[in-house]
Every structure is written in C-alpha cells, then in structure tokens.
Image 1: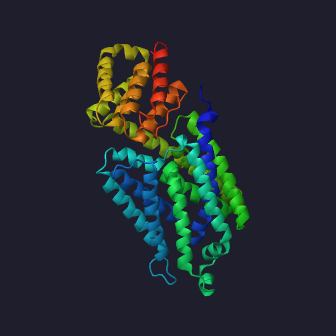
Image 2: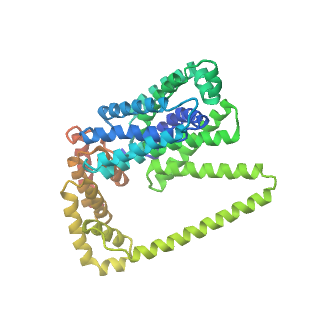
Length: 436
C-alpha cells in the first residue's frame, strides 16, 4: 500500500493542532507576564532532562526519557516561581536567561560524553513531529485538555496575576504559590511538546500567535481566536511546504511562522501609519536591501567554498559523490573511474562502524547512483542502529523511494520490527532492477 500525502502528514497536522490549542493560550500569559523566554528556558531544562537520561542509556521517546524530562521541568518550575519577587531588584527575565544558558551549557557538557551527541542535540532542537504516533497525539491531547481545564477552573487567579500582579498582591493572593502551579502545568505541557516538536517549534508555538493576536486586539477571546486560526493555517501550509520541498517539518513550520509574523507586522505598520505611501516606500527599501545582502552573502559563500580546506576523508567522499550526482552526463562519464572508487569507499563507510549518522549519509549518497544498493545499506542500518532518531531519519529516506513504511516503527528494535524489515527487503529485491 502506497502512502499519500495525507497518510504521511496527517499525524503531524493533528499534533500541530493540539499544540496550537494549548500553547497559544499559555503564550498570552507569557507575554503579559513579560517573561518572554521562560518557555524557551523551561523547554531547555526539560530537554536537559532527556539529555541526562540519554547519557544513562535511556533513549529519547521512551517513558524513562519522559520522566527524566518532567522531573527537570518541575525543578525549573520551582526556580521560576521562587525568583519572582514583589519588589525585585533583579528582573525575573535575567534569572530565566541565566537558567536557559546554564541548562544549554550543561546539556552540551553531558552530551559530549554520550555517543552521537550531535545527532541527539539536533533531535532536541528540531524534534520529530513528522513521525509522531497517533498514540502520542492522543496522550498529549488528554494531558493538554486536563491542563486547559485546570486553567479554566482557576482562570481568575491566573489572569489576575498575569494582567494585574500588583492588584493580586493587594488582594492577598499567594502569588508565589499560584506562580508555582502555573509553571508546573507549563512544565507538563512543555515536557510533552519538546519530545515531538523540539525546542524551537515549541518556542514559536508559544510566542508568535500570542504576539500576533496582542498586536491586533486586547480582548482575550479574540486573541485566542486569532492565535488558534493563525496556528492552524501556518501549520497546514508549513507542513505542506516541507513535504513538497523535501524539508525538515519542524524548522519549516518555524520559518513560516516567522514569515507570517513579519507580514502581519508590516501590514499593521502600513494600516496604522499616518502616511501609508511613506510606509510602503520604507518597506520597499527594506526589501531591496535584504535582496542585495542575500546576493552579497551568496557570492561570499561561493568564494570561500571554492578556497576552503579539504574536509574529513569520509565526509569528502560523501561530498564528492553528491557533487558528481549533480553534474552533467558527460562529466560523470569522464569521471567514471573516480566515481567508482568513491562509491566503493562509501559502501565501506555505510556497511560498518558505530558512526551511524555518517553511515546514513554514505548510504544516501550511494542511493543517488544505485538506489537498490543504497536501500539495502539503509536496511542494514535499520537492523544495527540502536538510536531511534537515526532509525527514524533512515526510514524517512526509504519512504521517499518506496512511498511505504511497511509498518516500521522507529521506536522499536530490529527484533520487534522483524516483519516490517522482511517486507522492506522483499520490496527492495522485487524492485532492484527498476532501481538500478
């Protein structure tokens, strides 16, 4: 059975839908409390928990990783609630920024001692929303609904502290206690979100819809409606762009959010400007300068690329074959001998070793010239790789050729995926002549 765009993108779409629902609401609190980076800091603290668990052999996406992440998020919640003072000499945002920096630095130190740390950091930043499971979506929806219900029941307290903190103090409200409850529920949401969406997408889901809606209106229900509508449209279009352009889903949605926010800000700037012609002229000048800077940096990049030092031998082999695959037919024929030698080197790289990320890159390069051999190398990688996030990247590459996942689950090991791997091998063997 071949997979359609809906089969591939539907789970990611519904995951974005429930992320938008809760994060747009929490983002309004974050903006009004003027703790803009608390979401990024708490996400980084939760990610640090996953990283520490990874150091001890607990793979991301497992229940053990979740509890590590949640535990660290609770510690972060306690720190942020205690750092808020009525007569503060040091802004709470400074404490939040310090927590973020420390969590990021410690994560780098910890991951430096873990195998394939670079791939793990990339996974934490970008997430794996494209391959989220329906069971994960259902679980997150239940948790987010519970958090939303809790906030609805105690909305008077949370809204009072966010909108009028001094008034809350005057009425005798225990601000620190309710702050702790806010950050605890915030941490629960963040823990679920970071595991699938990554730190970057979580931050954008929280901040961009809130900023957009606050720029347009001061009415809460209108702010929520604008945030939810924007999140829905941006998620659908961002995921579709990532699919047709073959781009990572999370970063694509993040970038598209930025583009939409910029367009909204420029539109409001023109509408509210007393001289609309002058406003449009300034925007035109800004666009022109941006285009000129783009071409300048592109030319500089081409110059330095031409004169850069040689890469690591294995990386050079991958780069060499990749460049050959983009050259003309005549060029490939004239370089046939060199290409064959590079392919032999890549086959060796892809077959053995514990650098599974490099093995995947080598297999992808081989696939450009011989899809049959390349897919067989990826099949072998799926059998041997112990890291779910690399297995996930590998099956994503296979889907590009087969349009079929064969029932493969990247969170399961080779023994548990035996039937799926058998079907994949049969498909490769049946289509080997076509894939040559």
